[in-house]
Length: 446
Image (tube, rainbow, N blue to C red):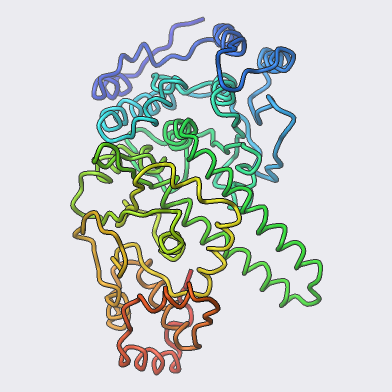
């Protein structure tokens, strides 16, 4: 094998992150196969692999077939048009160096800010190295520890495909690595999927709620399909599709504020466990130390708190303005598929919050500089100066709901509405007058 020639820029970047550039060279195929063989033979794990299954799996890797979907169980997933493969030997030095730099920078933050269980998971999966993991080896390790497997995808996939994978205990992962020096991406890459998410699988409650989200998604999808079979007009079909999309949006918020951007209290201190946080060195530190965001303690077992998550809008383009904090991981077990579906169906009929505001009933850990009051979104909207698109969406949505009349069905929903700060009558009047003149019709409201 010829020696890799490193460019001056590569060496300079490696030195900047304290990385020995000679270590940013992946093992050759035959050495990775030796490592895979050792992994597959392990029996002192929660989910040992049957020898006959391990043999077939090893032969697939040995043949040079790129990794696509884990094959250590009889289950598989249909990735529709988003199927992809990891062509490991095609990864470039830049890819591996970007991984090494990201991991090195992440570790500086994770050791201080990540929860105990997450750090233990990283050790089990050996994802702190200087080269991108071979998915054949990583998939086997993940299965042995959690019963989950990987499925490679080509890009951001639709929510129903993403969560259907979860229902079968597959986690979709991309195969591209962010450019060198990039801290935060709006779309997932190897750094987010592997260096961010994978270690969370060893937190049993998080893995279970991810699976529950997948089952809830399947429930929503199956109900949509049943309704579509009864629909007789294009208008009916469109409404059915739109309703299901809306439910998945609100379910996604529950996932976002916990699995992706959740904090937890450990020994009285804030710790991060959300993959979206821990895949970004900047947000890892900011999520715990910054004075900018609000932090609110929640109990997912409480319907009120779960509705708070489902009705809170957010943006993906910048660090979060409010983080929700678990007292412990055990409360996540209350998020059964049935509760998820019930809560998101309720959220569709209720006014929504923005990611900046603190509302009555919140158990506030701290108030951040980004905080706004519940009615500020309406004042900023009418003044033509909303802070961001999130405030604009929530303000227009709520005012249109009040304009047409709220559809309250249960005492729980009435309690939710009664706890909200009343909107000044003049605000509703001005909004109604301006909508009659054609304003606000083209603005998205979800």
